[in-house]
Image (cartoon, rainbow, N blue to C red; front, side, top):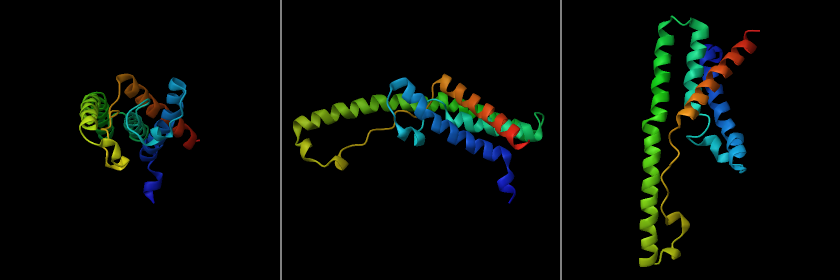
Length: 159
């Protein structure tokens, strides 16, 4: 039963869902296109990874204090996660763009050389996921989302 009263855990989960949901209206404002698949996708504004780890650290700070060992662990975990989101994962996404271009060019060659059109759609190649990582601004706003949402939840619950 204690699991249901673990505030840092639930604040972190709430931050993930909130950040994922917010991607839809933010993308709509930017592109004027409604894309509900963003709710389950990686990348984009705001970073749900950053929101989750900052919500976790903020929740731990509120419960155990800034001088606790567990807060230190969660903060280092958050820093590594957010650094990874802007570094390695973003580079993987940029590599995916280049690889998708190469695959597209190769497939265009196959279309001319073979009867590509007669194949069923499911037989054709799947593109690599290009939107893996985050821009620094997406990580910043994801982190800010996690902190602010956790503070609001803590205020509501402690009343």
